[in-house]
Length: 249
Image 1 (cartoon, rainbow, N blue to C red):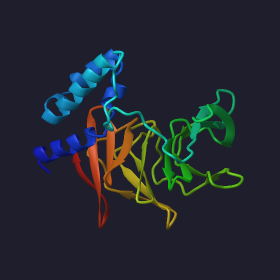
Image 2 (cartoon, one colour):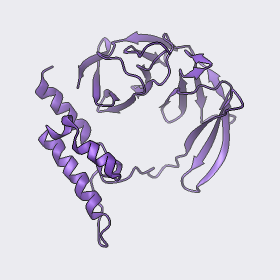
Image 3 (cartoon, rainbow, N blue to C red):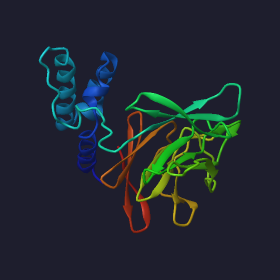
Image 4 (tube, one colour):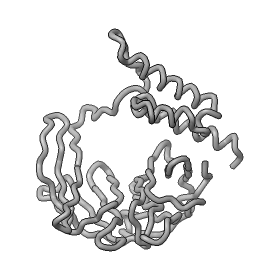
């Protein structure tokens, strides 16, 4: 894929990034302004200028928030949503969890994971099944646990192990499949990617990234999976053979 096409993908991705909100701190805004990937793209420059003006004007008395996806904080919508929070204990191997209800601003105890699973990746399928993938429990782990939040008595249950041990990995969900992307295994950063197919309850390796990435974020937009680590973006698409690496930005 040539450079112009890659720039098109970057523009499409940045259209949905809330730059005005995340750029509220001057140091963050400065990093954004100086980012070559953005300042060399005319449309992305427009998003950067929008973020700059947003933060200059928001202290004004009659300031109105622009009605764009980039300027509006995330909303929970009409359905009742809760946040599942994870807390690591320094005295116990167990990982404690709590429900947080933004509507009531109250916390409530949630089912804990019996092992620590520090630096695990998290993903949700069908707004019902929460997956804790990999992480560290004394050593780098292949373990996967699942919580069915619709259950009358929810608890974490073990699932099929990853093919590769991973911590600080990225997790993304696409077409009811959960992807474990990159991460590390104490010795090396990883570029490998694997997918869990719920229908057959198994993990399998798919196309690798062009670069090893550790401590990355993963997002899904328009049936594409993006793996983002500092200034490097990998783009995957779904094809007949499964996940296919398209390009690295």
